[in-house]
Length: 227
Image (cartoon, rainbow, N blue to C red; front, side, top):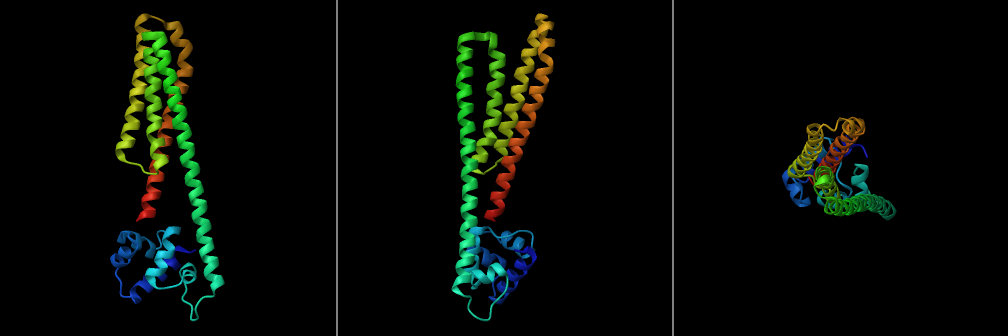
């Protein structure tokens, strides 16, 4: 489906009906920005919007999908084919969303189990491991925030700020533990763990930023589809 051709078809048909972009958007329970995007060829209507859009423009689904008016009523087979293609697209999208949701839920469950284990380690070992446990718990929280947003396909600035704040707190806790080793003069243990620690810190930062970018992208896609 060519975006420019479809956009021009929507614009022409809307004008033929004497509708403004806002009026057409109101029939679809969307914003006029969505209609403007379609007509400019910037984006396509969501699969779930095509049938209501065809009804609002008073054209058949086959005419809308092909972006061409037909002199004779479309054959039932053509309408059924178009409706079937839309249903398949919706099912595929729904399956992908469910898969993403389950992946996020499984990860969050594993994080919860890991947090419970770390709290048990802290209870058994006491203040000796407090710094490391605090850093790990904060790190799990930094990853959990964007995963929760991914599961909901909704990204908010507050969620990103929370995730990045927890990540910074995790790094601060880890470096505070290193500072403690420096004050105690435990240079041997520090040098042995420095290289692996830097690798872990780099991996942690990359994953944290990646998850937040994915959450932001998922939120943008959902918002663009709802407009």
